[in-house]
Amino acid sequence: MAMNLSPPLVYYAESPSSKLGLIWAAATEIGLWSLSYGVDEAEFQAQILERGPATLIFDESKLATALVQVKDFLSGKRERFDLPIDWRGMTDFQIAVRHAVMALPYGETASYGEIAARVGNPRAARAVGAVQASNPISFVIPCHRVLGSDGSLHGYGGFGGLKTKAWLLDLESNSK
Image (cartoon, rainbow, N blue to C red; front, side):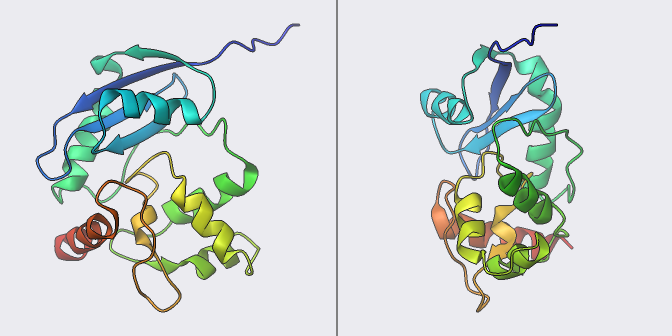
């Protein structure tokens, strides 16, 4: 039986957000593919394609649930996401790190080194940082919860950088 090697269909849509600009979400039939904010449509399409070839289709109905959950999260009304993830295009290490980060409870943090230890490679703090820097699914994979070994804020690739990371951590600590 021949394998279907055609690029996945990736549906995408946007929703306004007063604090962070437009929120963009993309998903396949398997699950969430990409989530970003503060970028325009062309930039988001480029982010989608960083995961690999895909056929892009704008379809608000396919992303309605994801965008509502993100809006609720950003307003402090949601602590956990109930969205499947499409892990294709990620390495085993990236997936392991992202699962470990997703396991961090709302309002809690861990260091890059602690995440490295949780995935069985305690010397890989920098590699964990690199994985987090390329996180394609903001908020759902809460890379803002990962801090430097001294508890300080380090590298946040999302729009607004460390200012946004601090805002997200403050949102979570004040919503509990």
